[in-house]
Structures are given as C-alpha cells and as structure tokens.
Image 1 (cartoon, each protein chain N blue to C red):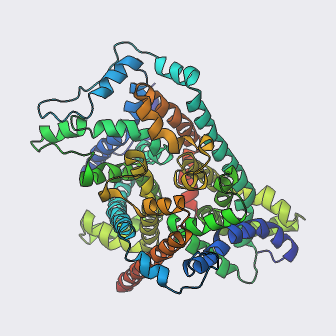
Image 2 (cartoon, rainbow over the protein chains, first blue to last red):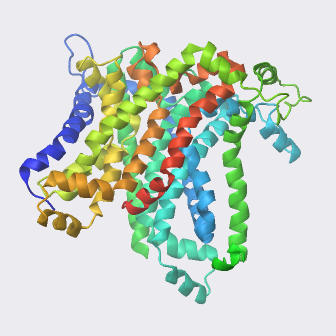
Length: 283
Length: 294
C-alpha cells in the first residue's frame, strides 16, 4: 500500500476528473433538469415532469418492454450459463475448445449477424423448416410479438459466453473434495450443484445476474439491427423513446425518463440483494 | 514408438461427462452456425445471393427457401464489389476502426492508472469512490446517457467525434475489472520493488503492468467488442453527423440496399473481431479468473 500524496494524485486525477465531468456532475445536473420546465426562465416545477411522463403511453410502453425483455433474457442467460459452466467443468481439459467457441460470439459484432439472422428466421427459412419437421406449425418470426424471439436469441447468442467465463472462474475455486464427500454421502449430481456449488459461488452468481440484467437493457441494439429505429409495439424499448425525445431536444423528458428508470432498477436491485441475503443466511 | 505412449492416458469419460460432451457439442455447433453461414455465403456470386435473398418473405404455406450449402462457383466478387466499387462501406469501416482505436488508446492511458490508485494506495474516501464506481457500473446505459448529453451540449461537443470517444475513456466497468485484479497483486511484490528504490511510477510501469497482463488483455478484448458494435452513443451524439457514423449503426441500412454483398460486408466486419478474439482469448479467461468477481 502506498500513501505518497503526490504520486497518488498523478494516478488518480485523470480518471477522477473524467468520471466527474462525464458521469457524476451530469448525473446531478440532470436531476435539476428533470425538475424544471425547460422554458427560457427555466422555472422550477417540482415533480410535474415526473407526473407527466408517468402518464405518457410511449414511455410506459418502452419501460414495460425494456423490463420485460431484460427479465426474459437475463434469467435465461443466468441459468443456461451456469449449466453450461458446470458441464464444461465436468469435461476438465477436454472443455477448452467448447469454452472458446462459446465465448467467441461475445467479440463478434451482432450487427454483422443481422442478415443471416433474418434468413434463419424467415417464414420459409431453416428455423421454420425445423419446426415443421418436428410437426409444429410455422411461425411468422419477423412480425409483431413473435419478433421478440429472434431478438432475444441474438442477444443471448452474443452475451452468454461472458457469463459462462465468470461462472467457470468461480467454479474452479470450489475444491473437488467437497464433491467427493457429497458423493460418499450419496448426493446426486443435481443436489451437488444446488447444495454445494450454488451457495459457495453465491456472490459471483449475484454479480453474473446483475451484470446480465443491466446489460440486457442494451438489447435495444439487437432491436435496432433487426427492426430499425421505429419498431413494432412489442419491441419498442425505453431507448427508442429516449432517442425520439433527444431528436426533439426534449431534455426534460429525457432526464425525467432516465431517473424514473433508475429508481425502478435500483428498487429491483434492492429486492434482489435482500433475496440474496436471505438465501445466503440459510446455509 | 507412438506419441501416445509418452502422454499420460486420458481418463475415460464418465456417463455424466459423456452426456455433457454431446450436449456441449450440439450447443457449440449451433453457436458457430451463424458465423459459418456468413463466411460461407460471402463466397457466393453476387447474382446468386441476390436471387436467393429475394426468396425471403414468401408467405406461401407450400414454399420453402432452399438450403444453400455450396455456391455454383466460388466467387470473390462480393468482396471485390465491396472494396472497389462501394467506397461508403470502407468509409464506415474506417470510422468504426477510428472510434475503436481512439477509445482503446484513451482507456489505456486512464484506466490502469486509476485502477492502480484505487487498489494500491491508501487514501481517505477510497472506499466511497469505489462504491461510486460500482454504482455507476450498475447503472443502465439509458440512465447515464441522458445527463451526459447535457454535458456534451454544454461543452459544445455534440456532433463531434469527441462526444462518442470521451465518456468511454472512463468506463466504470473496466475500472472495476482492473481494480479487482490489482487488489490481488501481493503487497510483498510491491514492497520488494520499493526496497530496490523504485518509485511508485516505476513500480506501476515495471511491476504492476507486466503482472496485470492477463486482465489488460481481457479489458482490451472486451472493450474492443463494445466499441466495434456500439450503437446507442453514435445514434445520439452524432445524430447530425452521419458521415462519421460507425459501421455498426449503418449496417442494417447498408445491407438492405445491397443484399447481394451483405454477407461479404458481414464477414469483413467480423474478421477483425475474430482476430482480436484469437489473440486475446487466453487473457480473457485468465484475466477474469484472477480478478475477484464478486
């Protein structure tokens, strides 16, 4: 540990300055914006903007869709990346190629996947062919609410590898001896994972879930690639609403929407944290 | 004498592991499929691809799209068209490369030093600052973006490349990632360095940075992925400056207009990302493994 003041400032200052200028100060300044009316006098209007935005249908639709899409994607990523990480661990050194393949899409720009995705999910395309072979009906994947499926899948395709890597790292830290003991005691594989692995890696699992969830709000990207700036109602996200308000230079609405969203997200975080705390105490 | 005798025998798979093996093979095949198809289709002649893509969007119950698996002739025409006849693609590609390079360079100057200060210096308010970074990291992009537009306007940076680049240089996630790694660097290592008379700067450059190689590699690769695929920031910050948009934002417009070369566009776009991935893949895994992710 170093204490020298002079060199501390050398290391700290650039980052601190940038953080303040581009994140902290605007965040605080934005609160002021959300409480004024944006006229030339810029009158203080209290929570009038909030009251208005909470009656705005486009905002509510975007908010609902953003929350829904993220709460669909994040749990799927969370559960399947945990299962895949457990499977990778069971293969030991044979897993390296698989692990590398699973992480690869994280680096690949999902924009580039657009054309092939539209092809795969076309009405006459391979996905529907597969469904047909299995005796299920075709689906109009590229319209209205069904469009959520290809978008969520593209998002998962790209992002699951990152969660797998974090899980794999945490799994490596669990000593093998625990499992041997559990086997001797007669615990099956599923019991071993839920009773030994999951409690031991709980802090990491919490991080994986939170990151997966927060990042899932960026699913706007995938929506934008596939459906553009003016999509169907079923996939109109909060970001679409905000982009629209930006285009009209309506900063009051933008900041108000942002902070309303922040309050909701952090309230959900709080619940999640409490839930984790409760479960953590059990063992 | 075969090599096999020298190597230790691999343990045979248990039933559970064999099942994992099969399932993982299937999942990996599915994961690879879109990339492989994109690469494969990029070598189809432009006309063949155009005709094929026109069979999309047919809602006739009795009709299917063909499953194209091999081209009539292997052709580099898509690439030729793209690189020689369509300057707009290259322009956008270079825009993307410019943003990515500028952001990576800036991050390299700011973030390792910041993380070093946060992990290896003792000062008042350190925990509070780290907590702040954590909170910023967990804030959805939509929440931080709105106010930062106000700053950009105030600084007169809207519709300049700086608006896209500058906020990214202080990205809280990478500060967090590097800090979590550097916290784990043993104090003895630094103390030994100090006894040799190295100052904090030399300790940083000659001890901390080399030891942090895996996490630095991981950060470069992850940040590359972010920047190479960025959409939200340019859409807002560059709304009146479309000639400086990155490829990621324009890709869907471009490929709907030019369906015949769409796959070569995609393949060229993927290629640098794959190279970065192949170069840094061990670092990503090791860097995240050695960082305290909780």
